[in-house]
Image 1 (cartoon, one colour):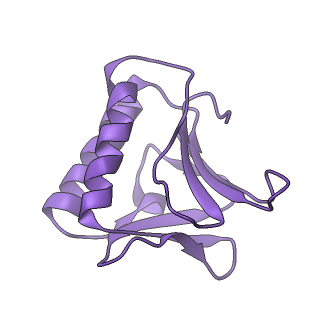
Image 2 (image 1 turned 45 degrees about the vertical axis):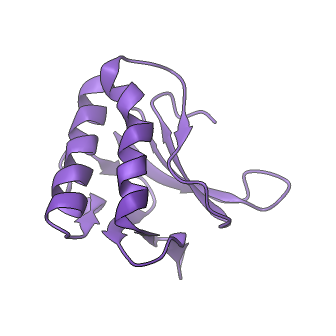
Length: 126
């Protein structure tokens, strides 16, 4: 599984933080990390410390907050995913199909009016 940041991906100047190049086994591991670290233990999940995720040009830290703001950054290198526990529970539902079989489809992991989307894509496409 790889992590990167792509800016200005369309005519609206939107950006995407992308988790890509993974299979069903890694999707299962990622889902379990979200459930255990964020939802159950109420801790932040720093993807730079996850041994099966290779960071290309950025880092992403996921954490539970009181409001949904999406992915934020001050320098386009360190990103913070600011979502409620309910949104992380929904994220697990969005990831579930990738844990059932290998696929080339993709899924945005939240729907918030924010210039940076969070893409989950085994093939890396959107």
